[in-house]
Length: 73
Image (cartoon, rainbow, N blue to C red; front, side, top):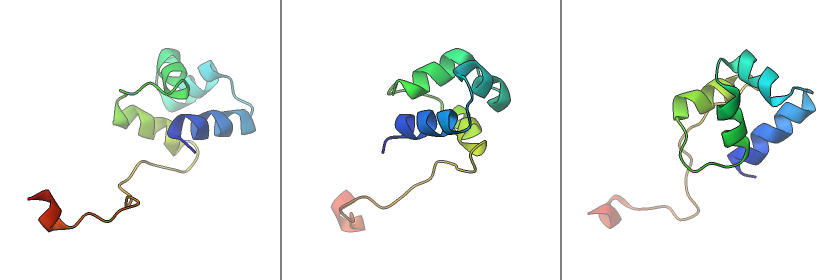
């Protein structure tokens, strides 16, 4: 599940409109709309404001392939 699918699903689960979610998170309605549409470039701090309402935050997770430090050199 992508981040935009996750946010949209959680928002609908708690029966909030996009403007209501935006107001509760302290972001603009346009930001929520773009987040739910999967815009490729968004401010991570604002994404975290939205996710915080649902008890989540962005973080680094291991990729499918573990990259070795030597691979980066």
